[in-house]
Length: 130
Image (cartoon, rainbow, N blue to C red; front, side):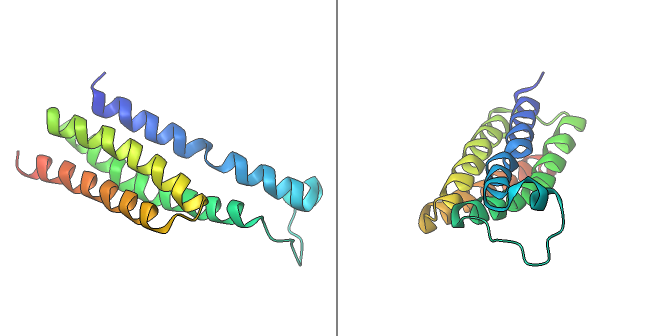
C-alpha cells in the first residue's frame, strides 16, 4: 500500500476515535439517560470536552479535503517524496491541532491548522502539476 494511503487510514482512524473522551465526559456530567436522550436543559460539558468536540468537528471537516486529495492522487498515480511527506506532516499537524485545541493553546493550534492546510495545498499542487 502506498504511504499516502497509509496516512489517510491513520488520519481517518484517529478522527474516528476523537469523540470517545468527550462522550465519556458527557456521560459523567449528564448521566447515561440524558447522554443518550434529548434533555431540555442539558448540563454543559467540561470546558476541555467542549473544545475537544469542536476540534473533532474541525478534523472531520478537514478530513474530507485531505481524503479527496489523497484519493485523487492515488487514482492519478501521483506519488513521490513530496506527497508522502505532506501526508505524514498532515497526520501530525492534525493530531497536534486536536491536542492544542483541547488544551486551549492558541498559537500552537493555529500553527498546526495552517501547517495542515499547507499539506493539503501541497498535495493539490502535486496533483495539478502532473
